[in-house]
Image (tube, helix red, strand yellow):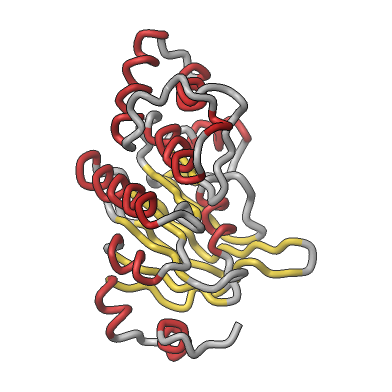
Length: 243
């Protein structure tokens, strides 16, 4: 059974179609990169999977369960996922309290919170920064705190929306290494939206190409990059597509 199944999903905002009849499967344990130009629908796709917004048409299943239903039902399913956005949304508090927030909401003991937060910060290379104010962090450090805040919840699905955009190479490498490690060590499924084609090549088991709200094609990484089946994919990968 696939972890996520999207069947004929469409979503519009005002009069603009963000996604048009998208059907996509996310395999358990894979890293799936979503590529495409700005406005292609990548963020909308992730927000739909994360159950932050509802589709206008179509169905989304998570672990075989229909995600349609009450907000309580969707909240229960959402607790098995975590999402990191392009811009870190940290609270005006310590690094430790930012990472601990989700655990405290879920009722973990303070001893367990301390152990799990310390482990998560070590995992992202920020051990010892727990007492720092989040507002004093660099952009790269802040994004790694956001990643730690997601990973500390031990999600089955990690959704990443351009998490390395505008970061310097060392922080890009650090985040990519964490994503590869957590996928390998913990078998967490990852869906990663990126403009960076080289990043998609480095990280992904499979790649999906979105264009103007349409899922053009999905394939194994090497196959899609070396032998795309759709002319639009070929044009995008070669930099010849105009947008």
